[in-house]
Length: 241
Image: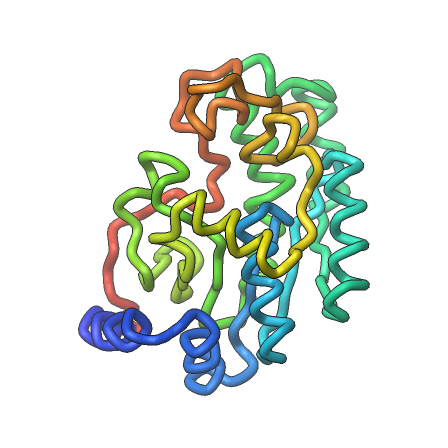
């Protein structure tokens, strides 16, 4: 999509509610709007909005095979509560076997390169399969989550995945999100009440201490940018197709 059209659409989305925005996108891109949920608090908010408004948006999640039990339990409870279908995408068996054979079952602790290889096999590659053939990818990203996300746009072109990326909660604060969750009685991962702010794979996530950065609990042994590759930004260029 051309940059000018993205700008015009962004202006429209910025002036309407989230459910209206997602509704607009489903009208413009019929059958090609998807939402990726990691079952985090932000994603639970979006799932509730989709279900409450019966929006024709396909929801999927990435099951890395190393998630917390609490995450799987929340997935089951969410499907029952909202009556939605959340399709799981799994890593390719051969790729996992080769990864573990080469680096070991917990090789991601040994280097950033090893960790990113694990993230690619278990998350990035399955995501690419989930997004293939679609036009709009809805996420639960918020700007205050990390420095890497502060400069993201409400609507932007994801060059790596060749898809429009809509971040409806981008400018929500933590307090606004928690208030919405409490008001609407949205189920969330109990690990959040134990100091886990950002929850990913069990071996790579810990609770944070008061005052620590929200992303400090992810890959805590690293000094990297704390991203797995799902939301790394590339130069924003228009789609030439």
